Length: 309
Ligand code: TMP
Image (cartoon, rainbow, N blue to C red; front, side, top):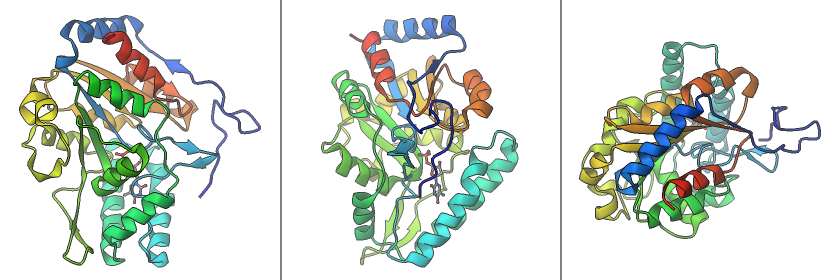
């Protein structure tokens, strides 16, 4: 679906205007940057949300799809039902006027209904691969450079998503064309039966407002979920010793991703993609740096390069 909106940064013809960066407290940001530089890359870890943070919000004038949204179950009736849920709940997810408590209930409802439909409607692993190939999804410009730079500096990246781990892995496989030793994923993971059909989800559901409750999962032993992770960069003991955090998100709830980590210094970067007029104040107060207008990741690449030349 395409729903080009008239947001700040898009002129009347729909062309994107240059990115804007908003920093509420530049002295504080400078202090935090100095602290990260002083401690070095061996003390840093990056925690990044996936949908609309690593991926673009707009793609050729259409909304980029989320890991949930790109799925085609091979069962149009169920795809339509999940689309209807998206149209109802997604505006509520970003509404600046609904209380956090109320919103949490709504998000539990949405994820519960959506995951049940995926099971009921019959999803196979093959359908996942095909859905990703056909999807409107793309990484922000600069994401590959960022991953390469962090890998070179030995900095682990945790992708912490309320989306679907199995889809995110397939997107990484298909769209990045290479694997990274330093990337780990914490997200909702599917369980398939011997015929490759989805039968359930592992553990407690992660939705966009309860990431804080799952933050400690990052420090848990790695088990089987961590396909291609190099034990020296990204094992749980080493991640716990990394007391500085660079957090990337697009939702205020993403700030909870680092809860329970006991970090010394955290720099938070927020991508404010839509509804800018109404949300800018809360984003400016919540994140150290806010990028407007579906910005690229190049600002973050520059920031990391300046820290560790
Ligand atoms: P994130 O934590 O990677 O941002 O992923 C969560 C996004 O997934 C959130 O913005 C809502 C979206 N979503 C869908 O698009 N469809 C769904 O069925 C559900 C449950 C969530």
